[in-house]
Length: 474
Image (tube, rainbow, N blue to C red; front, top):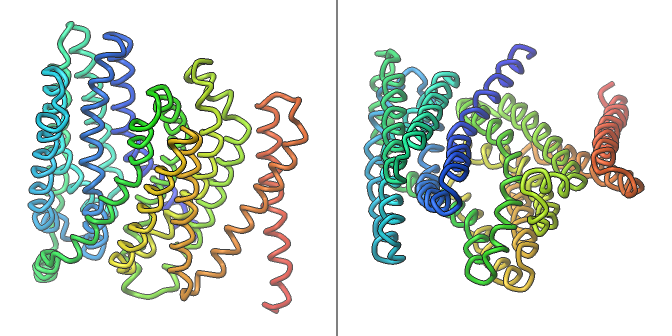
């Protein structure tokens, strides 16, 4: 058990780095361009990367399907890649055509902006190839190699952007350097995947599996989930941009940048547990449920800790990172802290449901959540600005968590999961009450007291629970 926890911790670390690498490359490239060329060129580059991010995120569901199926045939990595890659490449080509239509026809950007968007958008194809290779490797339980490949590709992007800026190159040259680095990263990822020997005993099973994957219903379900989640994740900014001043979009963007940066840990856990859950799902429930309960407990504790910390540190964090001109970001960040706290444990819920084959049911859940997010943003954002958008995100996150827990109602894990999440929520509430008595103290001291109280109360509640269960075991 101790060894398995160490292995899971290592997988979480690799998963967190895999999630962080491309985002860090984008953020640091933006900093380099902004400091060297100014806010205008930086804004153009951000627009191109945003299109790329939306296109890539919309296809993430296929990565989930690839990981799930590859985890059940870990010795057939090369065959699995050949099975999944054509669909992913075809969809990425379609996504690029959509980017081209939006940049050239619908929005009719100026020539420089259009060129950057079209060039950066080309990276959706090599990035999709790299994602497919990473997914089959993760499904096979190989976390280090795809992460190292992603880190290398991200470092290459940063080096390329820095070199172009140092030689006074244009934005188009920066965009081409970005795409070139993506191509190199995809070649490395595919080379790693195909270099792993394929067990001959898995040939027949991989062939059967290949035909199973070509049944469009599963692919469509997973793709629908990722498309809906992409819509859900972008709608708040789109509504703000359409109904409020540009400064409000900036305030909300700064708040989400801080709040969502904490999600790198939950994404690391997601990447670590999902292949293992997928492997355990067909064989029985005991080990799968143990893994889920460990994950949901850990994520619940960390999520509420983030909420408690942001409730006291929102103002100093905004001041430190963005300066006093972004005071309008403090209130939405305070609210988004709760949204992030709810997102953390829901990763474990979603992974369990997908691993057990409930992806079609998940389409209905995600549709309801996305519709709620759209409705709440249309209702609250025009009236309340970034604060309204933050409340819309928080309420829809609560709905997502509630619906997933309801889906688990018939599972043996339902009651233990509810009790563990409730313990974290009660501890957070008591911690916030304790910190409220220190309003005159510094924010950092108040946050320290709140976090210490939170952890102390959580541990105490756990001891009380174990004491009450003791006589029953005897």
